[in-house]
Length: 156
Image (cartoon, rainbow, N blue to C red):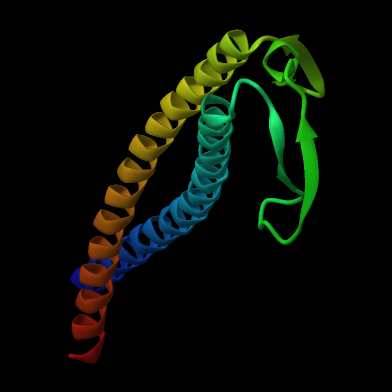
């Protein structure tokens, strides 16, 4: 009779362990989704910064006429005249709604530094995301083995 209660205790302990693994798996999956979303946000920022850098580098120094895009999807553009002194009065976004008036060289430097910072943060987030995915995979394998084992024990 004692071996029957021992078997029940082992089965109960196994069930609790599976539940704990399942809870951890769900928490990690939620964290992975948050990380993926954050990574996508930083990737978008990085693309925007690169676009700003390339645009500033390639604008003709002597100004001219052209079109300005009104939105990120390029849904509409309006004609614009860029004055000859544009490279001396660029407003660079510093964050939190603050801008700095700078010349082209300083603007490129500031945007490049921001781009480097975003790149560094992206690298850290991607490493963390990779670790989380590995852990999720390991837990999923444990759950599969645990669920398969409980099925064969329960069925037989």
